[in-house]
Image (cartoon, rainbow, N blue to C red; front, side, top):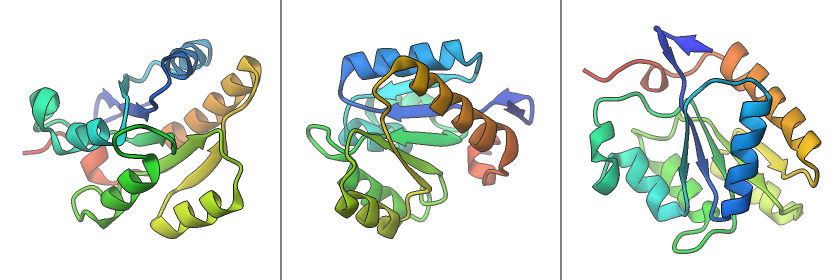
Amino acid sequence: MQREGRPITILVADDDADDRMLIGDAFDESCLKNPLDFVEDGEQLLQYLRREGPYEKLRGEPFPGVILLDLNMPKMCGRTALGVIKQDPVLQRIPVIILTTSQAEEDILRTYGLGVSSFITKPVTFDRLVEVVKTIGAYWIEIVALPPECTTVAA
């Protein structure tokens, strides 16, 4: 889907190269044509969102419309990165979906307490992952209204 003539970017934060590839393939299989960007840990995620370092070229661009966040990553785990995002007045309205192998009730409760929008356990089959991606696309890209910082170019 496009907002103001531009497709909404989806940002995936996951340290596992195979998972990143499968998520990308699932988006292709789902026929979602939105730009899909990847970062490999919580530190890169925050650099991307703050438009720092290698992501400085993104200054002035809309934030991602949705972040898919793994919990278990090196350097800075998803839990810590989520806490930083949701405490930052500039970033806190960006929808974050946890997409992780964890099924731990502690992770579910903690991340909802930090302000996550959804918690999804990674499916074990590719077909199920495609179904999850289609659902994410239908809801988060086609149906919901996103905050303006996710849909318009900054002045």
